[in-house]
Image 1 (cartoon, rainbow, N blue to C red):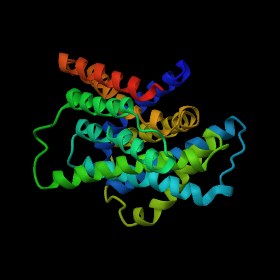
Image 2: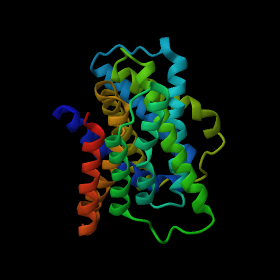
Image 3: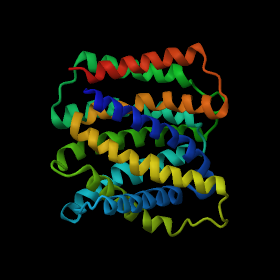
Length: 284
C-alpha cells in the first residue's frame, strides 16, 4: 500500500477503535436497535451537510437497490449484532471477534471474485487473529449462558462485513466515496426504521450517553466510512478490512491515555504481531 493508504487505514482504525467503547455505553441504555438507528441516521444527516458545504451533488437514487443491500449488510445488521453482543461481552472481546472479518473476507473474495488465497495471506490473517488474542485476551468475567449467542452475533457481524466489502467493490465502481457513505447510512436507517419504532426507550438518556452517540455517529461512522470507501476503491476489500487487526491497538492506546490503563509487555507483543499481519496480508 502507498503511504497515503496506510495513513487512511490508521486513521480509520483510530476512529473505529473507539466505537466499541461508545456502543458499550449506549447499548444498555437505548437498546441495540435504537442505538444503531440513531447512529446511522445522524451519520447520514452529517454527511449530507458535509456534501452541501463542499457543493457535492449527491447521486444515490440510481442505485437505490444496491444501497439498500449495502446499508443492511455493512451497517444496519452488523452494527446491531455487535451492539447486541456488547450487552454481555466486554468491548475488548468484541474487538477480538471483529478481527475475524479479514479471514471471512479472504474466503468470500476467493469464492466470489476468484482472488488468490496465498499462503502469505493465510499466514497474515492467522497471525493477526493471534496478535489480537494476545493483546486483549479473554475476559474471565464473560461467562454464562448468554456468552454463546453473543459470540455468534459478533461472528455474524464479521461475516456480513466480509460479504458487504466484496459486494461494494463489485457493485459501486465509479461511485464517489461521499455518495457511497451517504447512501449506506441512509439506507441502513431506512432498514432499521420499522423495528426501531417499537423499541423507543422509556427514559431520557444521560448526557454521557448522548455525547457517546453523537461521537459514534459523526466521527466513528460518518468520517470513518468516508475513509473506508476511499480505501475500498484504492486497495480493495481484503487489504481494507485488515483495519480490524489494528482497531484493538487503538482501543488500548485510548484506554492508556484517558483511563490510565497500563500498557504491558503483552500489549506490545500483540501490537507487533498485528502490524506484522497487516504487512503479510497487504503485500503482493
